[in-house]
Length: 454
Image (cartoon, rainbow, N blue to C red; front, side, top):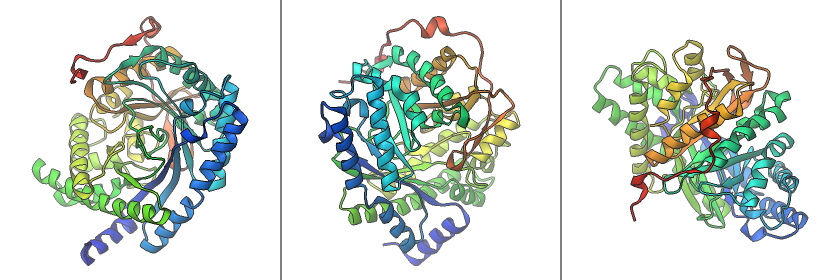
């Protein structure tokens, strides 16, 4: 049972420290919609989503009112569309029809985003996968709510370097296709290594084939709560610091558990996982970088930042698993640039570089996230950055991701404005030495030796 003291603590977290449930994400399987006619397929997809998700937003709003817990986003994830559209889609334009159908369904249900315009190509690529990937720039330029992801590798299969190289072109083409909106299409496109099946966060959410027909996943956030909690252990030893992080993560996760079970009961849909991720927003005081500073670093990116992030990520997970038996997704700490005012400040002050961010991704929950780079960055350079990040995930048996935004017409020193939760980002410099001879080799980087555990 939750006692009155915990209730008062939770209220203070919500009112003063930016605690929120970042998202209720309803996962929906579309495998039953498969058809060999693209128009019939689109009709089935629209009917399925709008039927299952018709009460999602209303349910979230009712829980907000009754418990006083802000639920920032209500989202939908679907089966990777490359699997659903294989029989019907003969051209990339056919896949764009599906993207537009997903967009209409998202609008009809009132959700913030719909994820799953995705392909899983960690070892090889079917014709269907290739068609969907090539359609991404057009699909994201023609839709408002659709998010896209591509899984390029895994610890068990290695890295599909043909797909890595292709994504260098696709990311640039997506930037060009949405150049009139500061290349925002790339903010809705992410590439993964070791993508999880139950991630509730965009742009990478999709409904994995290991999941039930429908599932409720909840993502909880609370960087502001964590920063405030650490004020009470300022200057104390690392053991005391770790205990405070764990206890705070426990309390945050309990809030998510309550919302998840309520949403599951009211919608009659099974509860999947709680994702406890310290996911920041552009709001002042809701920042991962501020947590680093409270730990004793002058700025995010200072020497010691990777160690601080490793501690934070691990203790958050340890606290979360004590609060819920079903912690999953990408639980830990996110380090996006554009969505975190403290990270933006660190870039502007010269404390945080792309290379330091890459080092930090070895121990964070995801990877290079919402990083804006010059609009004239070569596709080969982007592919090289992606390859580096995918390799970190493959070797370290963890999920890594890249969401790079080459903002067309902008250069280092400029500022890109994306709006809402996506925030704004300074254009960061990239290493301009050529890597084309490497990324153009083609083929596959084999799985590491420690993947053989059968």
